[in-house]
Amino acid sequence: MRRGTPSIRDVAAAAGVTPGTVSQVLNDNFQVRITSATRERVRAAAESLGYRPNALARALVRRRTQTIGLMVAGFRNPFFVELVEALEEATFRAGYSAMLDGAPSDRGTFQEHGHLRDWPVDGIIMWSMRGQRAEQYIANADRTQPVVYLSGEPLDGDVETVQADVRQGAADLARYLVRRGYRRPRYVPAYVQTDQEERTIAYRAVMQEAGLPLEIRPLEPEGERRTHAVDAGLRLATVRARERPDVVLCHNDVTAIGMIHGLRRGGLRIPEDIAVVGFDGTEEGQFLDRPLTTVRMPLAEMSERAVHRLRELIENPNLERSTQVFATGLVIGETA
Image 1 (tube, rainbow, N blue to C red):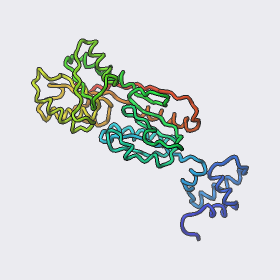
Image 2 (spheres, rainbow, N blue to C red):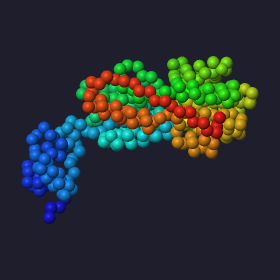
Image 3 (cartoon, helix red, strand yellow):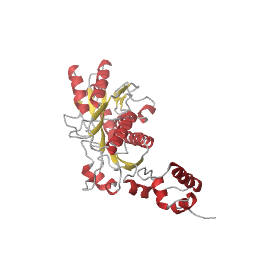
Image 4 (cartoon, rainbow, N blue to C red):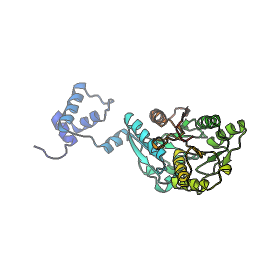
């Protein structure tokens, strides 16, 4: 009895055909004339022997790897962990493997740490932070893979985009806070933002409409690490009650969670002394002793759309690029 891993020659001998015929059958090449009976005989022989085609060899024949590259950075923020999980599930359901290019920095340093530029993938899905483009990091004369961008901000140019309606979500959250009677709002971006940032636009517009001033105080130093938000909360807790905001709108959930811990360590109660809200709708925020009031980003729906659209672009790279916008949802918790 033959020992070891069965080869394509073993399958050919068992089926009574040539190794070339086995290769054509197992690579689903229907342009070569092979009878249905022969195809069934080859597949049956391969199954009985436990033969598994070499994935790399099949990729070379098909010029497809059945692999999608995922470019997502900032895993200190649980939001991006949940995003990758949603993307991987959608990718596997579509019949592809996923290769993660996860830059460790929340700034997305793919240039230093990325590896997709060295590996063949059929297409790329990228979470674009502050207008990032995949070609900045994988530029190569031979690169022709289609790219689908996920984002919370509008992206310029002829690019395929799956976008969350962050502006509408922020506006819904701000109106909710106004209805609740908060009158001294502070917005805490994770970074120094321009006036064109979607959350800033929405929060400012709603507060102006309500006749309320909006204080904007970015984290110091910049970044999405909760330790920065804890420090900001500790500093804010030292401010006299009449001089501090009555509600803090945080750029995302991880900032809000850090802010809550800092304020509590400083002796304040949430929301009795000061309210805190987030943005993203992460699972972690809902497992606080008081669930976080936030805005949910529809990651599962966006991921399904991104993978579906990428499959279409892989099959037909000449398709016109489009933008699909997904609605966000207000999550009313107990922190505001």
